Length: 125
Image (cartoon, rainbow, N blue to C red; front, side, top):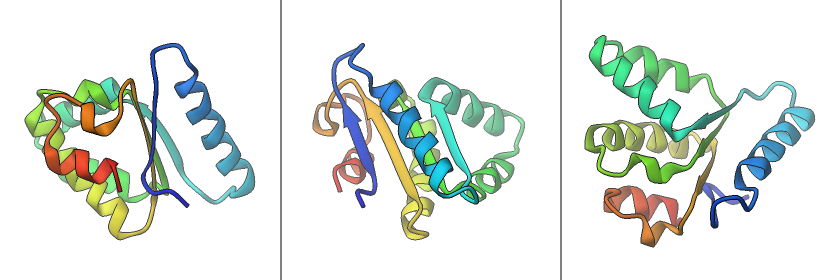
C-alpha cells in the first residue's frame, strides 16, 4: 500500500477520474469504509470557515471519522500558510492512525511552489 498515494500529471490527463475510481473501488470492496473526496478548494473553504467560526475542533472531529481522504489539486494550498498548518495536522493524524490519504497535483511534490517543506516531505514518503 502506498500511503500517501500522490498522483500528479498535466491538466486533463484523468487524475480526478482515477481518484474517483479508486474511491469507488474502495467503497465497493469495503462497504464499512468512509471515503471522502474533496477538491483542494473545498478543503480550503472548510478550513477557513472552521477557523472563522471558531469550530476547528469540529473540523478535526469530522476527519477523525474518515477512513480514506482524497484531496484533488493540492497545489491550490500554495501560499495559504494557516490552511497548510491545519492540513498538516489532519495529514499527521491520518498517518498515525494508518488511514489512507490520496492526493493529486499538477506537478510532483518537489516542484510544488509555496507549499511548506514539511508537507512536501510527507507527500514524498
